[in-house]
Every structure is written in C-alpha cells, then in structure tokens.
Length: 344
Image 1 (cartoon, one colour):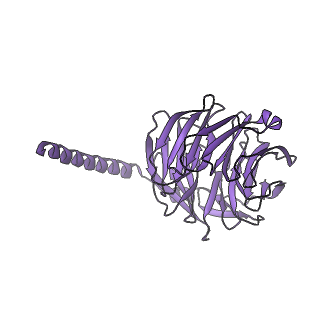
Image 2: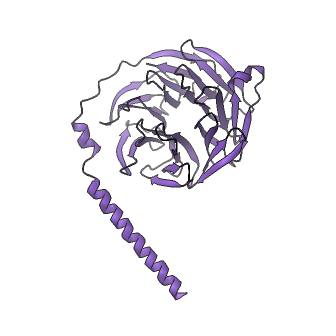
C-alpha cells in the first residue's frame, strides 16, 4: 500500500511539473494581444445593413433557423409545431412540415439540401427527406438515445448528424442505419449548442450550462480542450471562418472570442445590457460578428477591435437565432415574435 501511495505522489508531482512547463511555454509564445494587433488595423466602417425580406408564416415562437448551402433556402423551427423551408428570395414557403411534438428547439439543413432535421423536448432527432414531405410528413428517421431534451443538431454530411442534449452528452449518428457512431461525454451540465468546423470536419465545438465550451476530436471521441471564462450558461458556439478560433454567446450578457491554438480568451464583447446572448455568427471574412439578444436586438461587432458598430432593430421579441449565408451576402434573424428577417 505504501508503494502505491508513493507512486501516486510521484505521479502528482510529475503532473504539476508538466503543468508548469506548459504554462511557461504558453507565456513565452504569448508575444502580443488582440488589442495590440487591433491598434494596427483600421476601424471597420458602419455598413448599411437593412431588412430586405420579412418571412411570415409561423404562429408561435421561432426557436431556430439555418441556411441551406445553396444560399437561397433556409429552414426554421417554431413552437407552433411546424418546420418550414423558405425561399428567402421570393419569401415563399416551399414546404411546411408538421412535427409530432410542438416543443421544438433546433433545426438543421443538410449540406446537400435534401434533408432537414429537428428536435426538442421529445428527446428525438427527426430527419425528413424534403422530396417526400409533401406526400406525407413522416420522418425518414427518428434518432433516439438521448435521455434529455435535444438542444441542437448539425449535419456533418448527408450521411451523418451531430446532436447535443440536456443529458450532458453529444452524439454522432449514422443516418443510414440510425445507429450511434460515437458518444461524447465530458460536460457537467446541459449541452446547449454544437458547431462543426468548416475547415476540419474531424473536430467540433460544444457549449453548455456548465459555463464551458469544449473542442472535440470526432475520430477518438475525446475532449481536446476545455475553455472557461463565462459565468453563466453558454447558449451558442460558432467557429471563426478559418477554424482557428470560435465565439461563444452566454446568459452572462457577453460573447467571447477564444483562440484554439493559444488556448485562451482573446476578447470579451459586452453590449452594455443585462440581456442574455442567445446566438452568434460571423461574416464570411470574420471581420464582423453578429449576436442575438433577449432584448429583441442583434448587435454587429468589429471582431478585432471588439467595438459594436451597428444594431439591427425591428423584432418585437427575443431574437433566438442568427445565421449568415454561406457566401456572406445575407443575415437572417429568427425571433419569438414568430417572424424571420433577412438583412443585407
């Protein structure tokens, strides 16, 4: 027994030594700050972003939306029990899919534009094939394994989807078989959001009610890094366009920009409101960041300088979701006022 205690003490000492080595290495490489870099860049000019389309058709609170990769269509989920696929150009509803449960919290569009997904308090991720919904709105697949509500879902491809849940786990699914490929457990609170890298499909982010965000390796199922700094629930996470950083939106009324390589918080964005931040997305270049708030507004930020340069107003209730088109030419905001607005 004494030999075992000696080994444990030795291992702990070695761990502390390695932590010290890592801290020194990080300190040596930390040669500048984002604020210093921002001084060398010009101020972002205020853009004339205006509402160009108003999408009406839901009769309940809109909880989620996502653009299709074709930059023209989007899907929205509302607690009126409908999943609607829109043509944002014409403002027409292309498909209206009745859901088995009206308590929906998330929706997603597949990369190929042939599938949409939704989930919520029914603990299920329901997959619909768009070409078949008019003939009958039965799901092509219902993915069942989570023991808590489904908070977010994102397609990796037309064959795989990633889900997060109030059961503190994320799951990667095979859509052909409906089986679990891998389960990701490390959060100590409800997982509220996931984001898949547009650069490296082998990694994804998650954010949860334990106030942490985590970077995962899909191949191994391991958590690579845990990022701390928020003081309340994280509602949304989103990768920076180059895949080397990401933003978080939290109920503590702030957003943060984290650098993955430096493993640190680069910038905190505070709009001076007590309202929680519900959603976040970036412009195509990453120069601008868009954040939705409980106070009915969407803030436009200069990402590098951390300055708010505009506020998109007009909704009459909480903004629940923000999404930028793949080409960066449009922004959509979904709200509890049952409407979606397309801005450009």
